[in-house]
Length: 184
Image 1 (cartoon, helix red, strand yellow):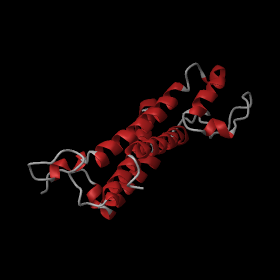
Image 2 (spheres, helix red, strand yellow; image 1 turned 90 degrees about the vertical axis):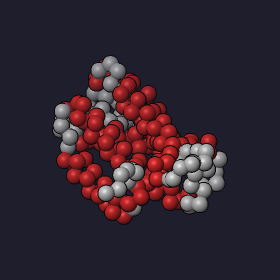
Image 3 (spheres, one colour; image 1 turned 90 degrees about the horizontal axis):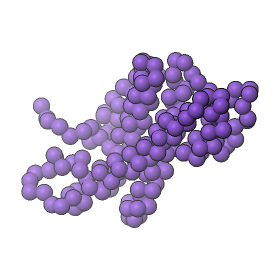
Image 4 (cartoon, helix red, strand yellow; image 1 turned 30 degrees about the vertical axis):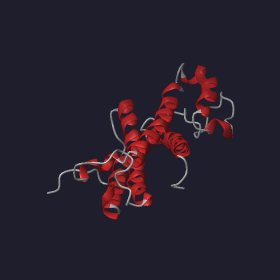
């Protein structure tokens, strides 16, 4: 997989980001104290049409759910759509920054530095991808917490406790996934 063209890998990252954005939206509406039946995975109100599998497709599903605007309010679908689009773009951008440019490790290397993209040639690509996966997982949790906090001024324990636990486990299992910084 590591020898695939960069464009294809970025497209895979965008697809994974769109799916992760759907997970973020699911978490926003599932873990909120005041749950709203906006999510395509929740049971719709009786006045609405039955939702289909196509309504659950990332990005496209929110465009299809515009038909429920009379019930949920005008523009209810815009924020979830933007969350999925930006998560997709963000996953691809983080991949390009961490893997292709290897910028996460710039502070760890002695000067003078070779040009970006050639920095860590001796390291295996799999080793470079491990931190990326943990960063993706923590980004998903942070996005859920952020948008629930914006809506309700509170962060649910399901996200707080699981996020701390996941972060501690990832830092223990793969300490190289931590951000570079000062050593004490």
